[in-house]
Length: 437
Image (cartoon, rainbow, N blue to C red; front, top):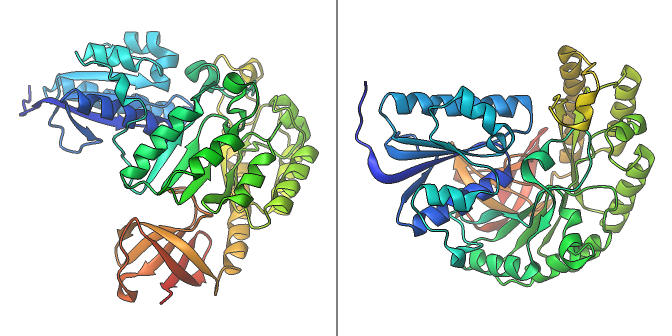
């Protein structure tokens, strides 16, 4: 058996999946640090006594990555490299009994809302005074900001309600307090996340209150950008766009997963909207905020999707010219409504359709980026890579959207600062620029 010096009371937190999991890991890490644990995020050293894996259970690929990661640390435990392995997050919430049988080497499994129980297992106290406090894993100048948990939508393909429960909004006052704390620690950009931002407030205030929340958050001194992720199209609250126009620090950016461009498939998905209504909504949003950047996500190969349905989606994407677009191949998820139907589209056809959409979008992105050459933008710089400083405009979210590259020889840029950049060249997904003196 291998042995290695392990640091007592050192915890390595490993995060898989989406930005909601990143947020949850950051909250967990703040609680651990307050309990005098030494905490690292995704440490490469393998010298921690305890490993906590925050898993994803959304689609097949994400589930497999989570299982592979659990197995890696179960093996490390068997080799004496770590003492304790704990698993939390969506996969653990959804498949706990199966995981306990299949991977018994894990010391304990926890669901998505069991942070106090996890802490108790580690002989740590849940610090109520730390509500809203986090140990950021992102660069210090931006933070993912979860405003609600769970989802009440009936989408046929989605297992999120099974893993995250019903929608539960965090009160405005708590979110303002958290934002004030983040701003005091140097955060300049808030990326608002939830399973459905537009449902915010219905449970607490009996009305859609996202616009009220945005006004309060935009008043917090030090917050320069507020970005909206994961809006739902059906029942979209148009007053949010009024606030976007009124407040300079609310980015003209909206991530709104639309899922498909065929009314037949949208109805089968139980999305509560048709393609025609979707087109009207997109048009109305663009009329109200003419320079808004719209990001969307689609699914290829939903059960019953014919070639005609796919071509309808393809033509719709071609017409809509979304600024940003991603597409998943359909994943047949147990206990969802769609699981009652045959997964009828072959895997190769799903991938072929997804690839065709991305090739189309690549051309659209290239065209839209060419228009930006010669224009000046306020850019927030995140990191350096090779010979370049790398940043983003207000129209781009971290990791998924365009990046602005400026040569280090052009001048010095401090990371986490805003700098005015003139775009000098552009390709499909990157903008190149120079500092404006």
